[in-house]
Image (cartoon, rainbow, N blue to C red; front, top):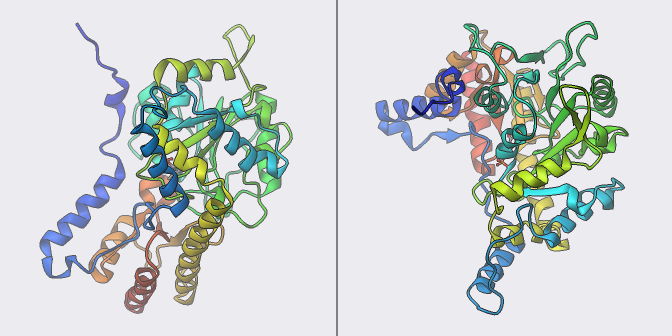
Length: 416
Ligand SMILES: *Cc1c(COP(=O)(O)O)cnc(C)c1O
């Protein structure tokens, strides 16, 4: 008798982006006359085409595959050497951060990596996440067996939720030393959904905490390219992080690779986890083994496309994309502020986190913005209990749409 993975049965109904789509589709069906006016600032997906240097590299790679002399079959499980070297040099060593080429592990994206990494750690580790949080971390841990049942008020038994609220500026504070310490801590900065950025003292405090408790930080830096304010982009800017952190990076938001699929993890050779009897085991050989056994990584053309982002033109093209989205974020941020709405983020992140201005709950205000402004946002409650009463606006859109969104929010604000 084949037994099912019963952890999947614990998952609370639906991933919440499908619920947003369901509501948008319902409105569009009800009011077909207004359907084409809908502007989507909900899901955090990029809108601009790929940088030309990535496109050229992918075309050239495809031509290589068309020719017997340059054809490539299975690639290395952890990614092509030249790509790993370009990343280690471009994102780390050139910025004074010591990361070796073979500490870079290519992948099909960091959403995948945030879950896959659990395979090399024991089931039953105590996992901490922020609240609000990117839902994929939590669901992956539910599937893996690191949690108990879904709780009536949202969340799962066994997960440590670190409250990020208006009082602490939506930034994760290091837990009280008297509380049982988590074994794994997911941190995301610049943050999705709140757009807030952890400053250096805060990241240092987390590194010290993790070292003290022999915990591992999973540092999700998917939005590091938007962080231009001087706060740490990589956790390895902090001394000691090579002993307690894995970093996840993605080309999704920087290079517009959400559909192409490519990202990477950094796993330092000095990072250890422990056996039940307390012996330290280096994780780097395990992660290498995991990739070589389970995958041959993403396609040659995609890896070449990612590598091209590290050329001088590639870097310029990414900087222009980031400038564009951050210009959108500024329009949204200033628009919301002029309406007197309370906001966070939006200055070093492509998300503006806003307090619901009419005192209603976040799904009610979502419906109101959908119906009265034909604007799709993301209700904060979908990211966790502490997200209730807030909503996220994404800056991934055209400039014209973003300007129109601000005008329409103004019309709703007048009615508030
Ligand atoms: C978009 C995003 C990612 C990137 O995911 P990919 O799988 O690389 O597309 C990672 N983490 C967060 C929080 C994100 O919002």
